[in-house]
Image (cartoon, rainbow, N blue to C red):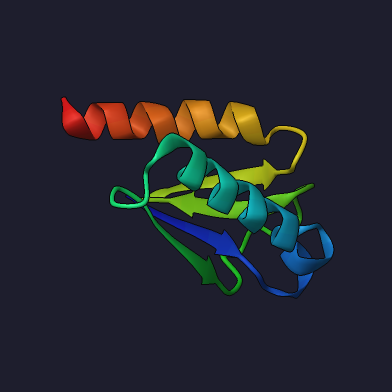
Amino acid sequence: MIIQVCIGSSCHLKGSHDVVKKFQDAIELFGYKDDITLAGSFCIGECMHKGVTVQINDEVVKGVTTENFNEIWQNYVVKGLEEERA
């Protein structure tokens, strides 16, 4: 799985550094180092939304914040990895 967090100007101001840290911590906690590539990305083109834009494989997830991170993690990352393994 490839997770790209937008670190462009707009997302940077919306907290992309904190979202990257949440992904790093969760990948470590769940032992997904070998399953996930985490990368920064410049503008994904969804700047008008609240929060940070993240691309998980081919799916663009808008409005990621530290507050809704756990929901995003479960719904997109954990479920996505389970589907890849099935």
